[in-house]
Image (cartoon, rainbow over the protein chains, first blue to last red):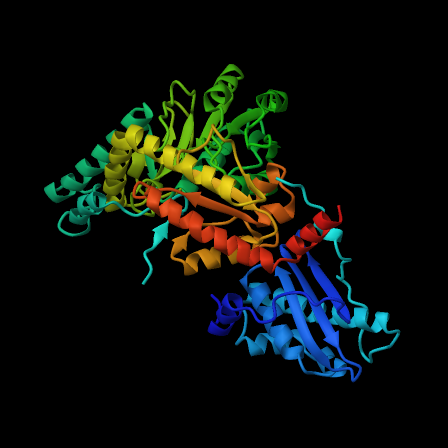
Length: 147
Length: 396
């Protein structure tokens, strides 16, 4: 059901991990629906995304879209990163099954949430960036019971 | 290519070679229509009668009480709609549970929406067992039917069927059970269990797909559900799926003959798998009852991980399993069964079901656990939920 590129990014996800003292972190989605994405950005003074990492709880498509999204924003300016849409992510993956399109939307939102965090931390305004709707605070969804 | 390890026998099973062998003549030279009068037709008619006899015998029923259907789902639909139609003058209330198969749940919803039926969906406890006191309380003078599955397809929990049958009998209410997962796995006696209708299916017991049956106790007024010819004692029209019925009969006999030994073996393998997973993988919970459980069912939730990712990675290792995650159901909600036993959504999303078959070996299961450990580690390393959990743990 998945394209070869989706399978490749699922099996060999690029940029998995965390960035210590990241310039911006965005976490979107919720565990109830079964998808949570967290994107870390390291942005230099020149407003270029030097590094980007992710962690994702979700299906194959959720992992693959996160992986591709990090690839697409790396090396881009903040303004260019903002233009990485869900469609761009999907196209780069040679498409997604219709029921998985929401995963690519989540990837776009995760980038926006991380950029928003960056902008807030640095008291700057990024043209065209709106406060992400589904941003969740770190740890909020982590209330788990132990077994 | 990697060796395939098939652990999804609750979804379907491999058709046994002798079942295929038994069916073949009815797909070739014995093609007669059982309803016709000449000798060729007689061969088909005889074969259908023999299968009916076999299945009736296994259930402690008369052959005349067995009606072949196109699937277990059709049998469930027929039992519910048929009983409601026949007895709605007496009352409009049906009692079922929250953990039934969709063949029951969606039929109940249909009856609610289109026929003004009132349906009570009983809660289950954390192991998935129906509360008998709750059942007693739900009964009203208008209750005409109780439908409770014999054993659950996802978590394997076996219901107190005999007790439910007794309660139904005491109140003069019909009792239907969806025994699709139990038939051939557990000894069933429709008289001792006070069962009035029972659905089963061939492809769960190494028989062919596309054939099931409904047991209907003699004297019940259930009308035809599929209209047309006079097949199945005028209750289920349509030329019989002769080869399917023959395969079903053969598979049922085979399952009954091997039941004791086979289920004992599967149960011991099942417990081995459960023990290893619980011991060697952290943050895991067993779903369903540890004892009142189908001999071939293991269902676990692996925390911080989503089920579809697990399935794909297992598939890459040649391991076929299933999950109750939303992504595998085509909706955004995880399995209604896992939610009904009280699991939070994120835990339900990370569930994995292994259902053993007659060919499953201990080596297969050991290999599966070895692979699973690595996969779980890989996916947890990628999980923001796990990251938060670890960080929180360190702070504490």
